[in-house]
Length: 84
Image (cartoon, rainbow, N blue to C red; front, side, top):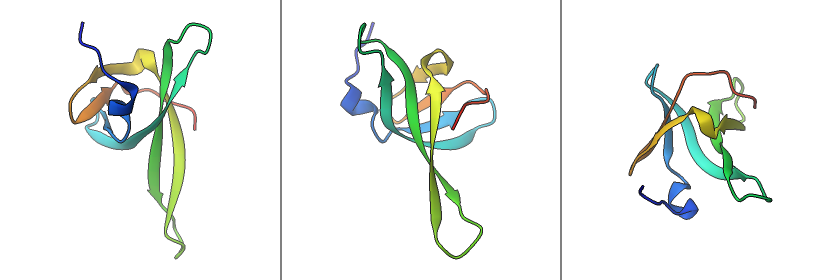
């Protein structure tokens, strides 16, 4: 089993592998404080704002069970409905 540091996960692009859609970049992890297990990824999504005030940032929480592979350049996830 290959190990990865949590600091290496930050800023990795997250791609929905079923649609090939860019979801955002990893900005944080949801970790169980009792066990130290990763529960999910927090993804910073940038969505275009309809008015002239620039981009709107939303956080998207993806459960760890939906992560298919963590690569060198990106994280591939399954297509599911995640909470914002």
